[in-house]
Length: 515
Image (cartoon, rainbow, N blue to C red; front, top):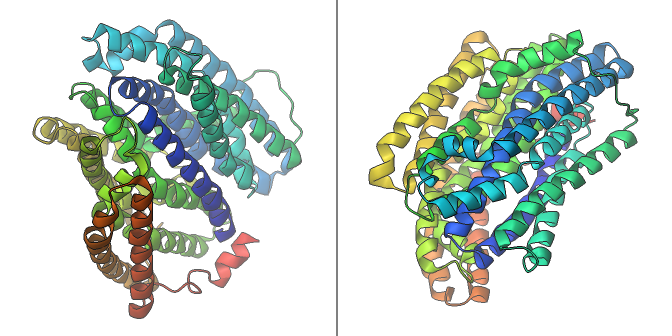
């Protein structure tokens, strides 16, 4: 399993770095204003469906079924199931896309009610959303074939697909911005074109893995009906974060101009550790837990979950504290160029700190839902998600006026922690999660090492970064010093107090699971 985590994490890290370059270019060319707001809102719409249908409910239901068929019934049966699922998914996703393109103004009037009053801004959002929405069926089919490869313990191609997204997006932004009405139109076109390239990459990888690709007659087989039955409740259970974010979007549409783009830039920085740690560990964990569940190996499942939690927390806790302590230099170095000014940096750093509070919870959510899905239970995460969504909505309404741009970020963080607490309690009650002594000892020590690191980062920001922050080049040098000081202090402190050990993070079971 560790090999899978490192493979996914490595490609995800490359994607996130390219993503930060992409966002830096957006900030410099567009800034934090109406055009940036319009693109952010238009891009969120297809991505909401992508995360629900492609990465959330579908993967949660598909990967355990595919892995189980592969283990028990062989490659031919698993291949047939994947092809049938692809045919059915393509049929209804293309139909949904056609309807969305026709009724886009009516749909966005419901999803973005705060924009309707400004006719020009709303028309721009509709135009950009129509350009980006074809990305949804393309990337959902990409996610299906990613699930096939993940179920076979082949993680590289699926993890590399987001790299393609960022490369195509950057190319369109730089190459087409003078040929289209705005940079936003070039960005929107880049989103949909990237979906084509990602799907082609995954189909090529599937063929290299030995699967025979064929397009079966469209039919709802018993296995496909079971898949979609399991997907139903999982649409909300696995997609809790996306549903909460949609609530945020509705709230944001009523907040002052530039709020959407400020939160977008903050969220993108926060998603760097979330993607590298949470997505990689969670993606590698689900097929492992599914195999243990199919074979009745409860102890092995507990051990895999404990080591995944230990690995994730060892990286996530310091990342969250670092984003809180060093948010301003991070945002200034990445984004404060061209149209993105110092005032935008200040409020974006505040939003980043609010998101970072919930970063460990966002990562843990990727780890505490797979144990349910591995047992074929998608209903329990749904019920917990409904509670969390209700709390998120209540907090958003309470925070939107007094906290303005901080409200949606802080509401998401707090509701995610509540979600995690309830999921952990239910897993423990069912015997699906038992924290071993090693994990119980390590977590408080990790927090201690993280607090030391946070103090060092705060001091380095004041005494090193601030004097060097006059120009872009010196800002980059200063941020490098701040980051190096944080990493060194966390690593040394953690080793000295026994919070973690690099050899201990790779016991024999992990090595065997990786083979």
